[in-house]
Image 1 (cartoon, one colour):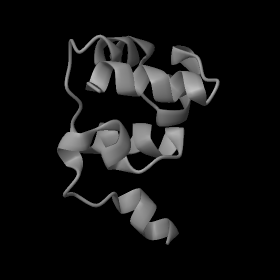
Image 2: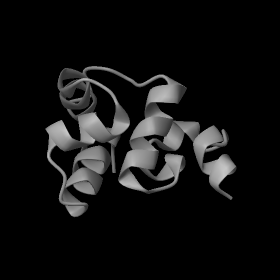
Image 3: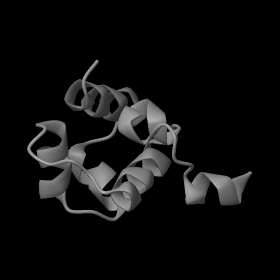
Length: 77
């Protein structure tokens, strides 16, 4: 599954609109759309905020960050 489908499917499975995900992750609606359409690739900090907003491990939504640990999730453990 590519990032586009993964991000969109996770967002929809949580019942979130692009706007609500943007609000929860504190990013722009435009960025959410661009990420879902693979027009942009997120920086680690943005990817981490999206994963936290979706309540999933970082590597689930952005596999390229699989070897990096989320500082937000680490603080919650």
